[in-house]
Length: 214
Image (cartoon, rainbow, N blue to C red; front, side, top):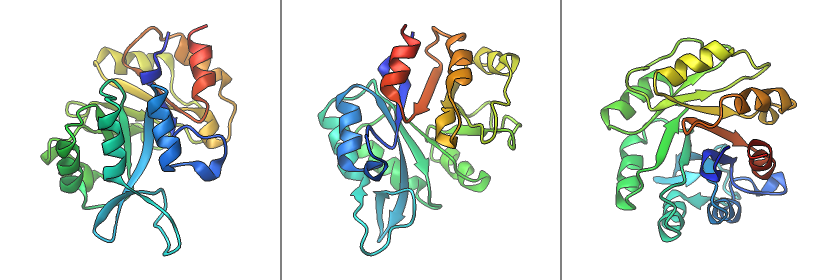
């Protein structure tokens, strides 16, 4: 079994890719009870939601707008997965999260020097693991691992069980995010359930909910 709050909608709940990271898609995911993954960077001295550096004509969402919706909807059980796209914004992120009393979040994808800043700010963070990043960096300090697989599901059952034994959360990047079929990966994940330490970031949250609760 996997609760909706353990499923992170990749850039919100959308039907067309041009709606990724839109205010509507992020809000819809929260309304439906899912957690979300989204991209945070700075622009014109503000924190915004955008995967790529915005152009002058681009529309973007202020990070505070998302936090306001999260707070208004009382989404305390749902995780805000914050994929950090800019350096030097740890203090600002901490301040904004504090302003809206958001405690159920995680930050990830920072460089090693930037991660040290997040540690110093006492922010919740995930370490990355992939076929190119096998070492469990900051294993004693991180809240869990952002488990990626660019080319193939490289991790074994023993690797996953070891992370779970360490009482670390595992955030799986679903295979379709890299253009692959997700069936084998999801089968592997299902064998680990039920477990509240297991999370999945996916483009197909409804399919995931049906599969893991069947």
